[in-house]
Length: 177
View 1 (cartoon, rainbow, N blue to C red):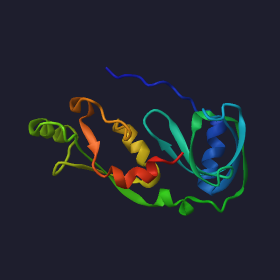
View 2: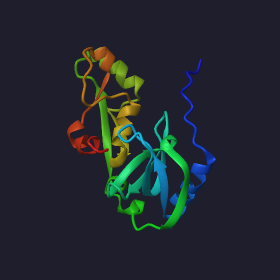
View 3: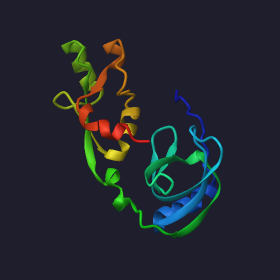
View 4: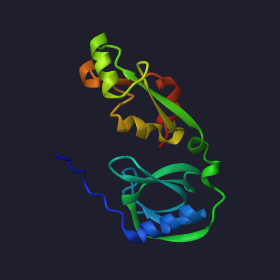
């Protein structure tokens, strides 16, 4: 049996100009809603990469409103985006996008030695750890994918099972957005 995930449609009239902007390095004027700003707001963005994090699609883009790179949920784009001119804010300028950092996952230290071996096997760990390469901008998505909440440790190690060994190194990229 396969568990279905909710359909979060991306309309072709939004996707076509978005892909063109990514390919050609163009700025885009679009309408966007978010949980922080539920009313439609005009955003000028320079998109460069689509990201699928398992449940929904995002686009990594330079946001002129925030003067920085952000991830925008595709199903929250509204209307039909307008293509504008070429942007100077390409993915090459996004430091968090271009720098990589490993996410090092290990069995929860509260488990017994025998339980740790089970978890190491479950996750295909080598030498007691799983090293997941990540762009710094995507660290939070890696942790979400492995169902690791860096702010909360489960009461039960059997429920937690895995933790991040290099969490201190990752913290700067967990604070963004």
